[in-house]
Image (cartoon, rainbow over all chains, first blue to last red; front, top):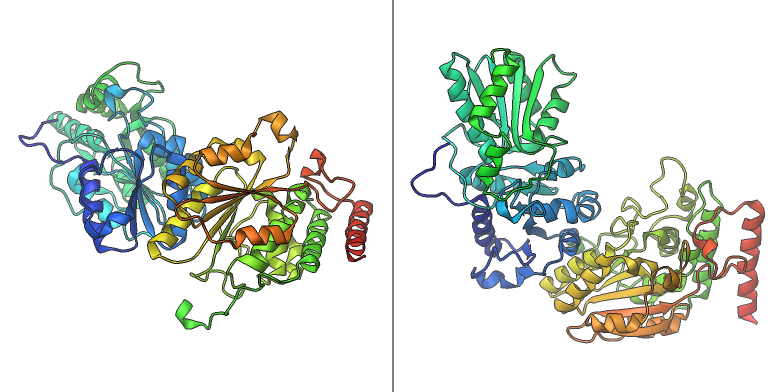
Length: 315
Length: 288
């Protein structure tokens, strides 16, 4: 993982800029904020009445968004992932998903990106909760460019969208094929093993692992899977049938997350081994930044390469 | 959609419509549904009858021919266990034919104990308590953004007020100055296990709402004229309104009235006959 000379914007900033840009232009859009401060200093111009900071009230945030959507509006709501997908999950389920309403839920500080804020602010269960809900689209941009593409593409969806965003800036991914919502992005071809990754540092770890494996003569393909639901099962199955082995990488607990989604989707389709690199089944007990905490949890290029070698029985 | 149709000049009812025959039929529908295969939430539906009848026949602008009419007023039944009361009212208001009520509780029917929007006239799913007021905020915000006169009515159970999310929404609604939002608390004082104030005290209820920034009216929830007067009064600019409607759980059925066991019942054949007879007797008594 290399740090670029100038820091790119965070996916959270990208979200803010898109909403700031789109709101004045589209009368249907409404932005409901929950005292996050994300939009501090924004000049909304003629759209000022469609930005509403309702306070620290995440259940009401989701319910109010549902009411607005029911009346023909397209609401953006934003709060931290820990609150969007845990505290407010019943309102998301019943008020938004059950009626298939076009609410765009921007869940910032996902995974361990809240870092030293601690386990109350980490969200390592949100993919499990959100992808379990019928009608919900679950999107995890891995850098600023993919955030920009995916958030804009998600605007066309008729139902709810969960946007899993981070806190701070993360490095840009290398250039790849165009990003398309619902389609896995092939970042690297490889015939020996498939590394399927979801989220900023997991994708970077997969790319680094592929480099390390290449030095040993192992050709690893890397799939950047930014849409967890609906999952691009055809692309995953195609890659898995070529390589026979898949290693998933994610910033989420093992239970119910991206790796679980991949395993679920491939089981019964083809004989394939799915190995999962994810956060251990534990609350993170120490302070630290996102990268430090991921390294502690074994979500690094070296660890992913080790897991791949083990999977190929070449350890 | 609105431009394609000729709109009715007034709601199905009017502020002076005689409601007694309607509330009687609503009660009969409720009793009939409770005699179906699954039984029903008889107590909390009976306590709601005058509230819903007043809204649908005297207060709200709705057109049963076009349940999704954009100009309509919105009713959210936050106390979803009043579902059969809502079905019965929607049926009387013409949203669907009476024979469909017989599907209630039967396999494959959209008429479930808690309302589902597949039933014409049901705006949002409800049943899990403490959701309606927040959704009402969104509906009221949408009306304000459109500068439309639409109003949003949210009917809450008093036991439901034990959910913290109600008070979260109450604070937000007042802060957002949503004078198009009207909450109605069906204050029948009972929940499954007993009296609301013994299970978890709600008093001083009116003062609580006032403290959250709401205009409060206390009314007899079975007096349709009193309900009409308050619900058709002009709003207090910038302030949401709540009606604490004092009601009787199981109203109209002497053998369960005011008792916690009225919460849910399946009426057997004999009880069904007894219930219908009691309703008819009360109509005769009222006529005298």
